[in-house]
Image: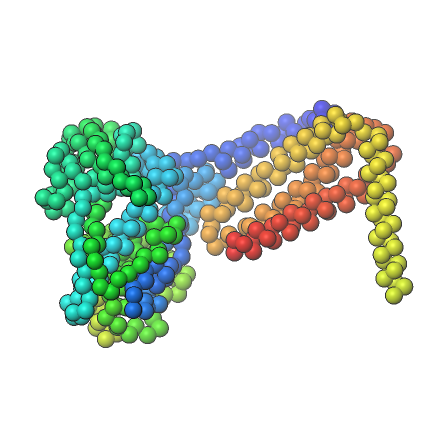
Amino acid sequence: MLKLIKQYKRLLIILIFPYIYMLFILVAPTQLAVIAPGGLNQVEETIEIDGYEMVENFNTIYVYTYSPITPFQSWILANDDSIFIYPITERDQDLSMKDEFQQGQLSKMVSLRTSIIQAYELASVTMSEISISYHYEGLYVYYRPSHVEGLEIGDQIVAINGHNYSDFTHEEFKDFAYETEVEFTIKRTQGEVITYHTVLYTYTEEDPYMIFYPCYVIDSASPSFNLPGLDTIIGGPSGGLIQTLSIYVSLVNINIGDAKIAGTGTIEMSGNVGRIGGISQKMYTAIYNKVDVMFIPASHVLEIPNREYPYLIIPVSTLEEAVQWLNEEYN
Amino acid sequence: MKSITNVIDSVFRFFRRFGKLVKLIDKKTSVKLVVKSVLGALLISILILLIPVLVVINMFIYTKLTFLLSVLLVFLIIGWSYLYYFFYYRLLKNYHPALNEINTKLPQLVESTIVALFFMVLGIVVLSLIF
C-alpha cells in the first residue's frame, strides 16, 4: 500500500485538495430547503363511502420537500424555475424527521375529517338521506418548541388554564393557548390507552409560536365512510378542498365526464379555502400530469408563475364558490 | 452437436485453469497480507467511486430522473467490483513480488465478473421492486 502511495505521491497531492472540496460540496448541509414538483393522488383511493362510488376525476397534488440540501444541489437547482429554494426556518430546524412525519399525518387526518364534515353538510342541503353529527373536542398540537417537555405533536389539549374546550368555540379556546403562561391538560391516545397529564409552559421571545389544529370528532354519519388514505405515508392538509369536492360530487352524483380535475388548498370548518405551500411547484405538477381543471386558493393567484397553462385555473376563496363552478359547468 | 461439445469443453478447461491459478496464488500468499490487500483495495476503490456516487445521489433531487439515476447507480456498483479486484491483485503483487510471474489477469476478471453479475441481479431485483 505504502509502495503504491509513494509511486503516485505527486498525483495524490495534486488530487487531494479538489477531492476534499468536492466531498464537501456534495455532503455538507446548507441552511436551505427545496420544494420540487411531485405527482397526483386520486382522492378515490383515500376515501370510501358505503353505498356510493367515489368519482375518479379528482386528484390532490403533492410536492417533494428536501431539507437541508447540499451546496452542489443548490447550484444545480438555482436556475430551475420549477423548483423553489428557501432558507430553513427556525421551526424547521427545531423539528426531527419523526416530528415532520407526525405533522404530515396529523394535518392529513384533520383535513380528511373536515372534508367529510363539509361535504356531508353541503350535500345534506339537497339530499335528506345524508346527515352528519360531530362535536368540538379541543386542540391538536401541530408544532411546539422541542424543549417543551411532555408535549408531543399530535397531543390533544382538552383544557387550558382550567378552561375546558366544551365551554368555548374553537377560536375562543385557541386564544387561551397563546397566553404568556399556560397550563395545558393533555389527552394522549396511544392505541387503546388514553392518558391525561398537565404541561406548564411560559412563552419566551426566543420560541417560535406554537401551532394548533382544531379537533372535531365525528359522532355519526349517514352514509358511513372509511378513510384508507390515513394509512399512507403522504401527509399534509393541502388536499382539503379537492377531497371535499370529490366527496360532495360523489354524494350528489354530478356527472363530470372524463375531466381530470386537480387542485390544492386547505379546507376550514368555516368553508374557507386556506393557503398552502409550494403553489408554483403544484402548478408545474399539474402541467406534467396533464390535468384539465386546476382549483387554487384565490389568495395565491398573484403568486403563480406568469406563463401559459394548458389547463383551466379556477381560483376560489370558499367551498361554495368551487361547488357553484362545478354545478354551472357540469350540471 | 460437435460444436456444442467443443464449447462446453472449452468452458470446463477455462474454469480448470482458473481453479489452478487461484490455488497457485493461494499457495504463494499469506493470510495477513491478503487481509491487508483486501482492506487496501476496498479503501482505494471506495475513495475513487465515492465522488461519482455522491453526485448521482445528489441528482436524485430531480424526481423525473429517479429511474435513470438508479440504473446509473447500479452500473457504478458493477464497476466497483472490477475496480476492487484490479486494486486487490495490484496490492497483492506489491506484497508478494513472486506473483508477478503468475497470470493474475484471469482470476481477476473471473472474480470481478462473478461479483458484478451478483450486483447486476440484485440491482435488477431492487429496481423492479421500486419502480
